[in-house]
Length: 161
Image (cartoon, one colour):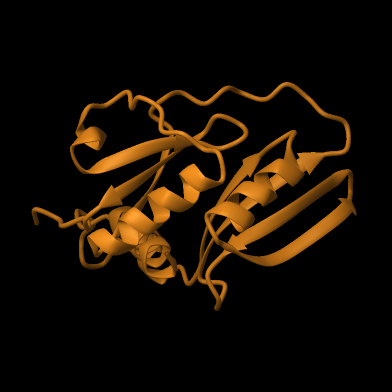
């Protein structure tokens, strides 16, 4: 699972690189040393249970009551790539995710993929129909407690470049 998350984060970082820059232009993405995706929630404990207890991400850091916010940072050891979930002390209406808001976890063996699928199903999570049929070919799509989607993909991403 950790390898899949690292691969996902690496692909995101590489995709941020803008190869169309001229040689004398500064490329911010190539200089960055950490990558974080942050998302608000009104279900912090349920989100923690899903991402830590079910998917197995590591809790890197957490905070409570910091200027009206509580949150957790999840990811891999080393703090290079992680997800942050924050919750305001006063719940507010949050934007609803579309069916194409995805986090994709790639698995390099069928055994690892099947183990991950089994774990989700054993914890009571059932796949949902993906918006994009591409993800049905070699993957299954699930929803977290906030209805954001996670695709488990049986294979690794390979660029056409």
